[in-house]
Amino acid sequence: MDKKNLTLGEFIIENQDSFQYTSGELSRLLNGLRLAAKVVNHEVNKAGLVDIIGAAGDTNIQGENQQKLDVLANEKFIQTLSKREIVCGIASEEEDDFISINSFDKQHQNKYIVLIDPLDGSSNIDVNVSVGTIFSIYRRITPVGTPVTIEDFLQPGKNQVAAGYIIYGTSTMLVYTTGDGVNGFTLNPALGTFYLSHPNMEFPETGKIYSVNEGNYVHFPQGVKDYIKYCQEEEGDRPYTSRYIGSLVSDFHRNMIKGGIYMYPKSSKASNGKLRLLYECNPMAFLAEQAKGKASNGHQAIMEIEPTELHERVPFFCGSKKMVDKAEEFMNA
Ligand code: AHM
Ligand code: MG
Image (cartoon, rainbow, N blue to C red; front, side, top):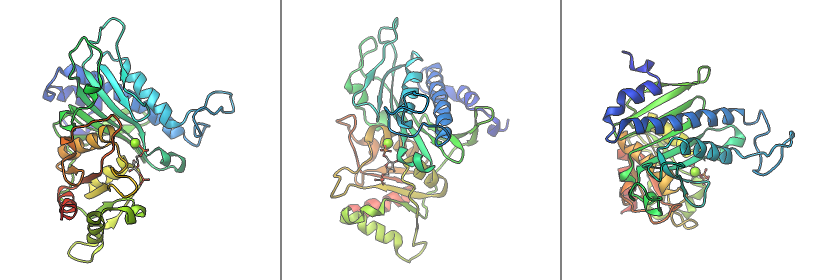
């Protein structure tokens, strides 16, 4: 059978045996994410067409409450995930605290924790540039039958059982891993169905693209400045090309296909950079490692970091393995 004809639903069923926990659970979870992705995709594509851009809390022409798309995406994902009798807790970039979920008659029987950035890079929405959703999935560590606690959310990235992103770009794709490689599915908008379009995605071992907000250059540590200069030097396959969308999912996606490194270093203005460990860096690190790439804070593998806070930030270097190795060399010199 031509794998490329597989729908996401078929692929999940065909591959569920490779998931180490009860297979039906994963299908239900991924189906929830798939559904929310389609709803958010629909809303994102209407941006500019109807009055949905604007500050949350404003009122539009019909007197309805306007919602910013990131608020709306947050609601859609939480709503969909809460209803599946599978998720016991959700943490989101849009919520200060984690949400404990208990279906009425289930007495905290659900086992999965989802951490999510519902609409990453949302400042790009107003200018018609790609945005994304990022998700990270764990098994709870507190006993089933009890309410979830912060401990369930503060697990190192290496405990993730699945992670992925949705990119709302020139086409909409859902890319995910359950620890058995990375596969990408493209939405056919006419049918509302995701098809396997990018089986077994892998970062090229090295690449020629570096992605960093160079406007922050003067504030970067010396090692990062030196690595950027190395990328720009004329030697061998260098200088590299600079590409920075300012939308992590999009920059990561391009670099995974073409080969490259994404960097959000610490700076003299932000001592841990900007990106959040739990729902931005860890899921991207899991995908990167599963795609034969690498993710580091400059000194340590992202997924080895023991989290201490829900919204903690961490410097992030992620992409083709040899490029991340080289960046680390400069930072540790
Ligand atoms: P957000 O979660 O507030 O959208 O911020 C995360 C985004 C990333 O997608 C992107 O790579 C980065 O912020 C861009 O930040 P900057 O504008 O500082 O370069
Ligand atoms: Mg974000």
